[in-house]
Length: 345
Image 1: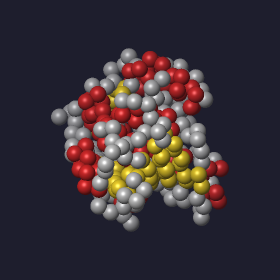
Image 2: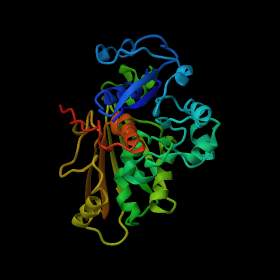
Image 3: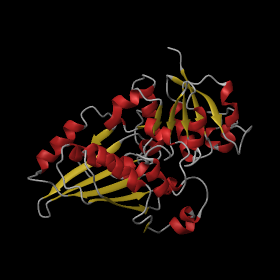
C-alpha cells in the first residue's frame, strides 16, 4: 500500500513535535511537509534538537503547501490562526485535523464569548466533527474536517460519557476538578510556566471562566441529549506532562459498585485506548501513551459516584488523539502507530 502523505502545519510547539514523534513510527504514512513561518528554511531538528538524525527535513512556509500532494494535514496552530487556514483551504482535496479550539464548539457565538475573538469561518463549525473516537467514530470516518478535542475535555468527557448516555446521574451541577502539567500552557515562555512560579507550587487558575468549560458542556449536552451544567476548575501541577481529573456526580436511582463497573465495561468494550483500572491511576501510568485510564467507584456514605481519569495531555490530550482521528479518516487501523507502552517511571 502506498503511504499516505501527511503535512504538519506549525512545527515549533509541543503538539507539532509530538506529532512527528508519533508519525515517525507509523508504518502507513510519511511526513511530506512540516511548516514554520518563524523558522522557515531551518531543519526540524534545529528547532527540536532531540530529533537530530531522526527527522532533519527542512521546514517550509505555509505558502508552499500547494507544491505538495497531501492526503491529510494537521493544524498545530494557535487559536484564531487555524480558522484562517481552514477558510482558505477548505476546498482542497486534503483532509484536516485541527488541534486548536477554533472548531470544537457548537456555535460562533459560543466561541466569541469564551475565546474573546471573532470567528471568521462559522461554516467550518457546522461542518467540523468533534474528534472523540470513542463517541463519534462513524462520523469521524466520513469527515473532511475534524476538531481535535482539548486535553481537559478529553479526560472529563471520557470519564462521564457512559453515565450521561444512559441518564444515570444528576446533571446540574457536574463537578470536574482537573490538574495538569505545564506543557498544557504551550512552549512559549510566560509567567504561568516560569520555573519560579511552577516549582514547589500548586495553584488553581481559570476559575469559572476557563474556555474548556463550554467545550466539555457542549459535548456532554450531546451525549445526555439535554442541557447540562458543568463546574470546571483546572489546577497547575509542577510536572511537565499529564492530566489527572476527578469527577463527582450523584446517581439518579439506586447504584452500586458492580453495576457501575459493568456500565463502563460495556460502553468502552470496543475502545482500544480506554483502560478501566482496578487501582487508582497516576499520570505516570499513561505518560507518553495514547491511553485514557479510568477508575470508577461508588461511595455509599455520600451517595456519590467518583471518577478518576488520567491522560498524557500531549498524546491522548492532543497529538495522539489527532493521529487516532487521522487513522479513522484515512481508512487505516485505528491503533496503527499508537501502541506505545507508557513510560514509567
